[in-house]
Amino acid sequence: MHAVKPILAINFKAYYPQSFGIYALNIAKAAVKVKEELSDVEIILAPPFTELYRVIREVEGSGVKVFAQHADPLEPGAITGFIPLEGLKDLGVNGVILNHSEHRLKLSEIFYLIKKAKNLGLEVLVCSDEPEIGASIALLEPDMIAIEPPELIGTGISVSKAKPEVITRSVSLISRVNKRVKILTGAGISTGEDVYIAIRLGTIGVLVASAIVKAKDPYNIMREMAFNSIKALKEKNS
Image (cartoon, rainbow, N blue to C red):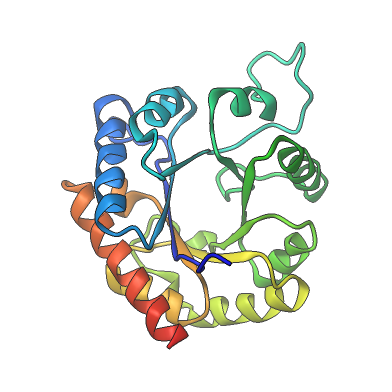
């Protein structure tokens, strides 16, 4: 039985220029370095579709995972401009983020995509804005659920400080429905301390965006968050 590792999931979104080109590669390089130094953390990178191939190549063999930011609930075929899961699988992603507050899906679409992803051997991280919605999604058996109150996304005000009760209620409701699903915290996570508090409140990790992607030195903030996630989980389990 493998020890459970804390999770640091980084959503690049589509900031320009920070999410693209050389900037995206620099974040990938930073992730590889952090993973080498702190192997007890699981790092997931979710770059824009245009950057997936080069980020996958950059992190190859490092243990850093790469997820797509979205997939469309459609079969491959005459679907111009849509992204089916099969194409992402062939590209080499490890998983996919679904239902981010900036790219919502219906519950039936989430269910369709979770089932299809499992058949393809892909991991699924589903976002939820409310504890009750998170519990509903947990019934669909995703690998991970990230709780993100949308009003805090991108504010720099972390949910772990502003709304700790959202985290504790989510953990309570989701665990009651599905003990296997890993629960992450998102929205406004900006510092190592935010990560530490989120894990001490009962989650296994965080979903972060601008705090790392827009940082002058992504490596330093990523390392600080990874270090604090490992510390918090060890303390919680001791």
